[in-house]
Length: 205
Image (cartoon, rainbow, N blue to C red; front, side):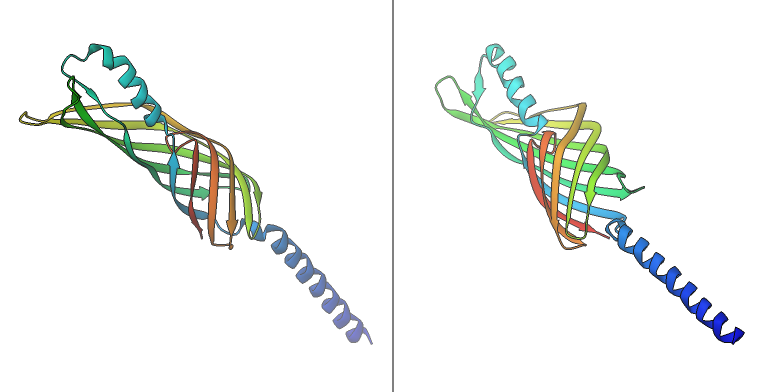
């Protein structure tokens, strides 16, 4: 009889332990993926605004030519985040943006092309407000530097190049992601080098 009671008690104890472990796993299942890689495309980046401001400042100083309409590519971003606890992840973002413009003389004749290439690196922190199997909400802050490579190529003249760097950032006020537990689409609203608005794909593992 004692053996039977002990065996039943042991089974009940094992059952309670297994139920508790299952409950904990169920509660924490949304935090399983520790790493994530994202690719995105945005609009209205910091460099976009700075380029426009630079044109406004420089136009009055130009004597030979002015610039035509902006032709932007990007910002296109590659991002990696590693989660360190339930609500915080750290990592980095690499962003590339290019602007191409016609160089125009006073008689409205195009004499060449100006290229501006922006390469940005941003150490980043991501703050998760909600993590679930198929949906998530978050904010994000990245601070870093942008390297600008400028080249002017005028017809019949040697091309001129310039290189400079400046402080840059990305602040995402609200980010929404949805899909499977590993592959998700996402959209973000905020401001910075990734753009005022951006969208992309994210792989979580």
